[in-house]
Image (cartoon, rainbow, N blue to C red):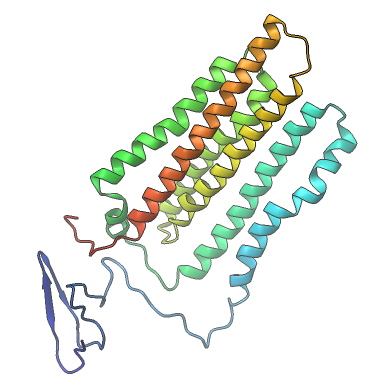
Length: 273
């Protein structure tokens, strides 16, 4: 339906918007697309080519920090450290650091590219995360993702201290890093903040899979060792780590799915939605 000759008011419950005579601005289902609350979408000009290379730089930097270290990082660490457990710890530490460097670069470029065309509105983004059902789910899953690893670290520290650091440490650091990135983007009033929870939840599922596999490998290596009380306690701690991180993987998947459903609602989003 077109409204090219006159201004048309479209009413859907409490939502009344002015189409302002723009072609294709009316929907038969009561949705209008003339504006976004608190901000204004603008089409990027094809004539401006100053920042065109940034579209390639952002994903290239991020993917490089994820993929390239796999080919040389462990070999470099093994050249200086001979203890296999320390090699795992140091390799994991540097992998996490490179991930955050790559993600920070990606986020900086994304904000620089997107900022001229999409203005920030706390009210608009508040509509995405303000639904009570989503808030309850987000608070519950966030609590699980923080409290459960902390309790697991406390319970297994005396038995498998180094292994606990390798498996649980990166997960907890990731939660803190996500909060830091989101706080920074909120202070900058950046409109690209949804990138943070999406990428972090995907990466967190990789972390829990990696931690569970690491604990499983250690359990498999202990099968041929003599059965002693200390060894049974150690295997029990590793088994608890493996099972806990498998469950945390499902929690992270749930968290990602609920965020995506809320980010892309299936019906018009109004103030009382």
